[in-house]
Amino acid sequence: MMEKTDEDCETLANAGPNTPDSKNGAVLFADVSGSTPLYEEMGNQQAANIIGAFQEHLKAIVARHGGTFVKSAGDDLLCWFALPNDAHLAAYEMIQATGEGGLKVHAGLESGTFVCLDNDIFGDCVNAAARLCALSNPRELLVGEAAFKNLALASKRYYVSISPFRLKGRREASRVYSLQIVGDGDRTQILDQDHTENAAPKAVIDYQGRHWEISESEPLSVGRLPENALQVLVQTVSRQHATIRLANGLVEFEDHSSSGSLVVSQSGEQLAVLRRTVVLSGAGTIALGVKSDDPHAPRLFYEIGSP
Image 1 (cartoon, rainbow, N blue to C red):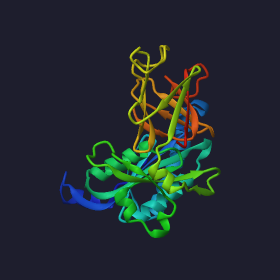
Image 2: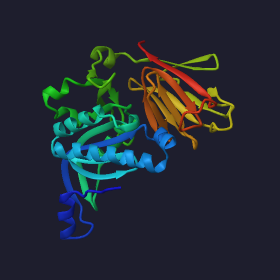
Image 3: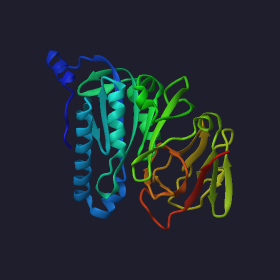
Image 4: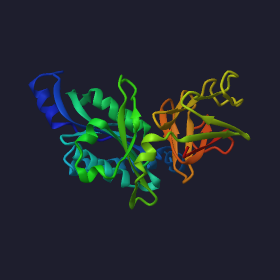
């Protein structure tokens, strides 16, 4: 894995070891989705080469928009920019890109003060960007309130506002903004803002002919144990496998398991989920106990619609 260090961090390292440097800027956390089936279809070496080449393409986008690449771990990429709008332009280009084998990008962006230390960055806005990335869908960019306020007016028009959302680790709820590429990537999905801000979506889960409707007061617990609202008696499913909840205008699927889950959208997008949270939208299936497509895995059907 190639690594490019932050020039400011290099200068700081020459001045003395382990000396933190405080900065103010925009932090972008991007992740590549679609790598799991690639490894299965092409084998480790070929898949790693394809993913590595795609990541190099993403790094070039960062550099082209004046950003600083910090590090890459697995399929993700962490970088920062002096100006939030430069980060937006880079992220917008990233989520429009499609790599070989159907690789796609989802990302999170937030701005604020952070610390540069030992070729890494730390701070609340770094954690927020990572959390927003984890919540985003393939080809979606989620932007925190602080970063959005400093975007150019021409950039803001691409976003839809989501109801106030409390990110993990933060005490106060803040508004989150979504930019999502749909179809073949040549247009941006713009939702009706009044509907998005004021009305909670309707979420219905179906399993073996039974239906559950999710509400903010009644999240749906899924697992092998009988105390789960939705019990799945399959050995590959964990005792407390997952929770589906409606919170802050979003429908979240949180995987607690050791075996993982596979979320497949109606358009065929696949997202492997293991001990993290993703946002559900539209319609699709959730295969429990697997991280890749398995026709024998138990499947939940979900549909997210208007109230």
